[in-house]
Amino acid sequence: VQLQASGGGLVQTGGSLRLSCEASGPTFSRYTTGWFRQAPGKEREFVAIRRGGNGVTYYRDSVRGRFTISRDNAKNTVYLQMNSLKPEDTAVYYCAATNRGLILSTIRSPSEYRFWGRGTQVTVSS
Image (cartoon, rainbow, N blue to C red; front, side, top):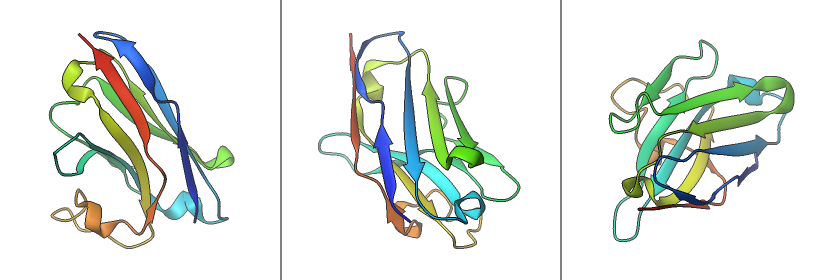
């Protein structure tokens, strides 16, 4: 599976962006997909995840209610709609996918994801 992320940019506080991640592969709909981010000097952290199959979603506490992960299986694309952006959301955002069955205690760990796209920079100005 190859992933191609896009949609980052510079936005003011309170603004919105939508990230897209287009994937190759015929069975992508079965994959668990997620968005992670990494700010300078910080570890990569999960932002939002959508399980393959049942579509259950998980969000980082700091983005819950502001970000929405969704997927269009017909287009093999995962989206991250980001609203009410804050300066602390500034980071490089990565999409990731895995075909492994993940348990609740590990699904948020970047090390569980086998496939990664190149990052896209999101900068929120104050």
